[in-house]
Image 1 (cartoon, rainbow, N blue to C red):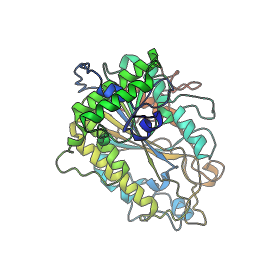
Image 2 (cartoon, one colour):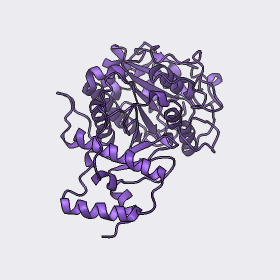
Image 3 (cartoon, rainbow, N blue to C red):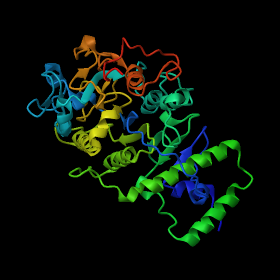
Image 4 (cartoon, helix red, strand yellow):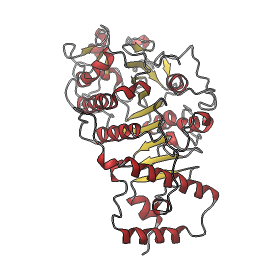
Length: 423
C-alpha cells in the first residue's frame, strides 16, 4: 500500500502546523498507543473567536450612518433606506439583514467600531490582508502572524495539556496563525475519523505511514506528532458527529454557520480552546452590491444569523467569549457606475460577547464630508486596528507586553476604543 504525503494532506480533515513545517495528517498518531490527557475543565478560561470578512466589507452599509444626509447623497442606488435601518443610537444603525443582532446590542454584549483599519494606504486585497494578519502594516517581510506571536510570547496563559489552544477552521493554516507556536488547522470537525472505518484498513494505514516517516523523525516532528495524536484523541472523546446545538438554535446553512457550530462544540467540549479563527469570504462588492436586499444583504444575513445562533447556543458560556470581526479595508463612500463600491480605506468591525462594552458604536467618527475623507474618497481611519486587537488581547485574554506581538508599534490604552471591559 503506497501512500504519499500529498494524499494524506489532501484527504485529511485535520492538519497540524508547527514551526513553519508543512501540514501533516498524523495517522500514525491516530492509531498509536494512547496516552491519557489531563482533565481540562477550563470553565473560566477566556476565549477569542476571530472572523475575517475577507474581501473588504462595506462598513458603511453594515453599520449605516443613516443620520448623515451625505451617506444618501453619495449612494443614491445602494444606500440602505432609512426606514429599513435597525436604529442603534439615532445616527448609526444595523443593516436590516443584521437584525438578529439587535438583541445582543440591547443587552450590551455587542459593540461596533467604526472608522477602524490600517494606517497603510494600500488598496490591494493581498497586501492589506497580509498586513492585518501579520499585524505589521506596510511591512511585507513579516513571516508570522500576530495571533501566533501572542501564543508564543504569552505562554503563561496557555491552557495546559492541550493541542487546541489556537485552531483555524479551513483547509490550510492562515497567515495569522503562522509561526513558532503550534497551531491546528481543521477543515471539517465532523469529517474527522471517518476516512478508515475498518480495523484492517487502519492497520494498513498505520504501517504505511510508519514506513513513510521511518528514519525521518526529528525532535520537532515527534513533537508535532504528539500534538496531532493528542488532538485526535480529544476529538474522539468529544465525538463531533453526535453534537447537537442548544434547544431551539438553528445555525444557517453554509460554511460560516457550520464553522461557528463547530467552534461552539469545541468550546463546550472543554478541550482547552483559547483562540479560534475562521474566514468568511465574499465581501468584494464592485458590481450590483444592493442596498437592503441583494448581494451584500445576503452575506450579512448569513453573518447575522450565524452570530446570533452561536451566542444562543453557548448561552452562559458567552460570559467568557469574545467574537471579533475584521476586514482588510472598507469601500468607497461614493457608489461606482456599476451600482457597487470600490476599494476604500476604513471600515467597521464588530465585537460580541459577555466581556464587551456593548450597546455603543465606538471609535471617533471622522464624518463623510470631502475635507474629512481619506484622499477625498474614503472613510478616514481614526482607530488603528492594532489598538483594537491589542485591547482584546490585553483586556480579554490578559496579555502582558504587547510590543513583541505588534513589532514596531505600541498599542496604547489611551487609544483603545473601549470595546472590552477592564479586567
